[in-house]
Length: 303
Image (cartoon, rainbow, N blue to C red; front, side, top):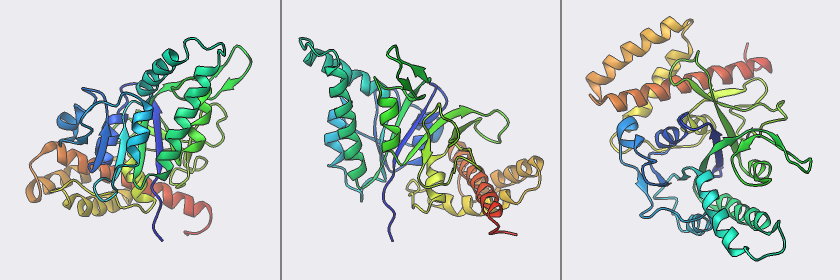
């Protein structure tokens, strides 16, 4: 049985690495992004991503584009900074409804635009990932409570996350090996919108996963292609993750990563960016493997 593509939303404070994660996770993705947003592709990740020829003027334009993307060519469509795109869409609607006597007309129209985008994303034959800035929980002047979540107008922080398959909040975690940010899901938290239908991050026993959508999807059974020329990464990541997951202490993990770095440099590549990418995926996969083993143990599946 083939797995259906996922509609994914990640959100968090600016500068935590959401765009970089998307670049790492989908080297065969089509990126919809403003000028300058994908600079880390060359300086951090080490490749040139495919991107739309012109910057998207609105959410409506992206919605129309979704139906034209072919699954054979791309693994995902990544809409970088959906919050900025929402601001543009609101500006267009405010001009359209400038003379309307209904003060809620703009917000109603905006909700329709985003829900149309949601429907198109769910029908797309590829993964669709949007990343946004973070909006804190708030109570509106009329008494309505809006969950913390993606920074979007009106009630959309409440409306968009339930329509996704995966909605994760990026939060700092300084004590982890690797990049000090994780994706958070907590089913008991009634103030922030999060979910994961793949249940890789179940939200109760496992409330934090690595900032690595690619490895989260692989753990759920999806095949995410490696960058052309870097197919060797999958073999190295698989073997190294198994070894890391069995390490009894942090010091052992660090020693193993140092030894792996030397072997990768000798056998596969001298490119430090690609070596770091490989170690990142192996470390994050090991994290998910340990979490999965812990969940199975809790249910008595493993001794």
